Length: 254
Image 1 (cartoon, one colour):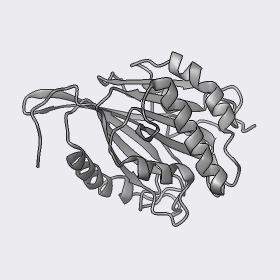
Image 2: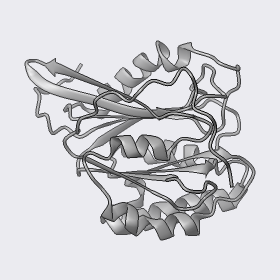
Image 3: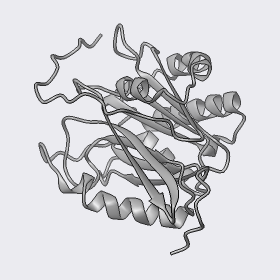
Image 4: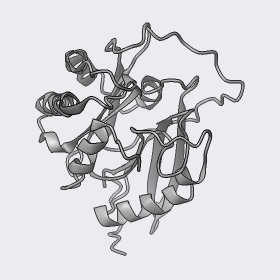
């Protein structure tokens, strides 16, 4: 079992996090690699939520990255399932099957199509994902879903991080209040080409998927893809943006 690392002297406290209409999150301990901490995060999105994603450009992406690239078509999202401790990378057909099993189990619990379930894994590479532990923890994860679960979710996806990371902004679109909030993990293997971290952002803004994807790609080029720590391009990293549309702002089409 991995042991906790000393907290970085650069650690910052989490900001005041709010809720995003149409989003609920939970965190549970599935016992994937760590002891005495949560390691599985589940997010549930209201029907009609659209998703956008930017993924690692590593030549050997992990099975969850391959799954998410396919799941973006059609671009609807009902769930996001992220585990820490095992990256499900270099696991061949077993890794692909593990993704299918986890998506199917999540879909059954939330009564949605498997392709509306997005997946991510972070941690040790080259080891088979213990999907039975993940699937076994899903009922508790569903029971714990809460609109205020952001901070717990941020802690559950940490690996070599020593503190959770999150951000929040409140803005307006044509006079309509809109909220944007996200969590992220990552401390090593940080470089451009989306080899930065796992980052998940949600908003209640009403945006069509093509606009959402364009905004995400543009923002990523000026932020996540503009930093480096060790010049390593990870196999697992991704940035995803989910829009529930419940702010009911005026339609944006360009």
